[in-house]
Amino acid sequence: MDALLVSYGVEWLNLLVRWLHLITGIAWIGASFYFVWLDNSIRPPKAGSDLAKKGVSGELWAVHGGGFYNPQKYLVAPAELPDDLHWFKWEAYATWLSGFAMLFIVYYFNASAMMINKDVADLSTWQAIGVGLGTLVIGWTVYDLLCRSPLGKRDGLLGLVMYLFIVAAAYVLTHLLSGRAAYIHVGAMIGTMMVGNVLMVIIPGQRKLVEAMRVGKSPDPIYGKKAKQRSVHNNYFTLPVLFIMISNHYGMTYSHPYNWLILAAIIAAGALIRHFFNLRHAGRVSIGYPIAGVALLLTVAIAIAPKPVQPVAPVAKTEAAAVAGGAVAAAATAAPVADIAHIQEIIGQRCATCHSAQPTQPGFATAPAGVMLQTADQIRQHADKIYQQAVQLKAMPLANLTHITDDERALIGSWYTSGAK
Image (cartoon, rainbow, N blue to C red):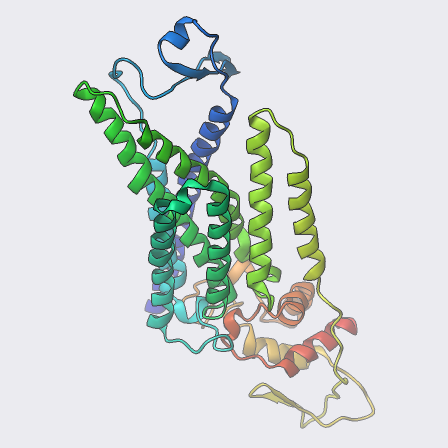
């Protein structure tokens, strides 16, 4: 009972922190998208106008919520520091902190189930957690050093090198952690780069601009340029991170043998689509970018489409038939069957430890996604999902915790293709 209450409490903590992460993420990404759009959409004032004389580099008129807005951007800074100055930082910090908390709640608290796949790498709990945390530190360090190097002055080449670095990280992680954990840590690494940009570059640069004005000095425009570069990086990181946030719902991606390559293609597609919108806001419509992005996604979808599973020879049910230790021990007779009795025994041993009213698998208080597989009727009801997840994708059991065998997967496939009776 104590273990159940702990798991139930952790599940509520997971819900509340995930909710917070979503709220703060919307606020951060919304602000990021808005300001990149604003920067691309403002137009320079007329030469000699009052705005031009004040140092305004661009302005925009907009209508929203029943009112008119007239945001203006200064080339460096206004002549006088305004009394009220809004800073956009807490959205970023709260998003990263809540996301980091979720890594502990969902992955590190239950690393044996969520991070380790013995078929990928035989890691201990602490080794898996170390890989996860090390990824965040190494990712930010490499990225920041690249931005500060001479390469940082060549945006296109820097973007390509960073893309290759992220793909390399995905390759390494998918060969150390379970596919699901590898994906989420690639996302966490990119998210750490994004919040690092805010904490270590953008906000400090803005503070120096403000401080210079307070003491009557002319602000150095280099701080604004560096902040703008990192802000644009964050904008391109956003769509890949959002995909990774929802990827745990789609085992067809992270459970594939070439999961790292799939992630590489989807990240590229997201960046291409984001680039189209950035150009469009600046008044340039380059339809080739979204076409290339959609083509990449379509190629991935076709490449990873599940292939028909070859059914095994049907198994006859006799008094001696039993499923023990993952092997189907049955004597074949003239009455061919792969019936629900065999399947229920396999599901009970390999799947119902989580998918039951009272899961026995540590770390689970309720059945994942509310799917329970304790009775024959429940198994028949979810036959499509069982076939997809356990046979086609081999995404379940999670990290193969219960050691389901290929023979057992094949038997489930045979039962399903023969009508799931």
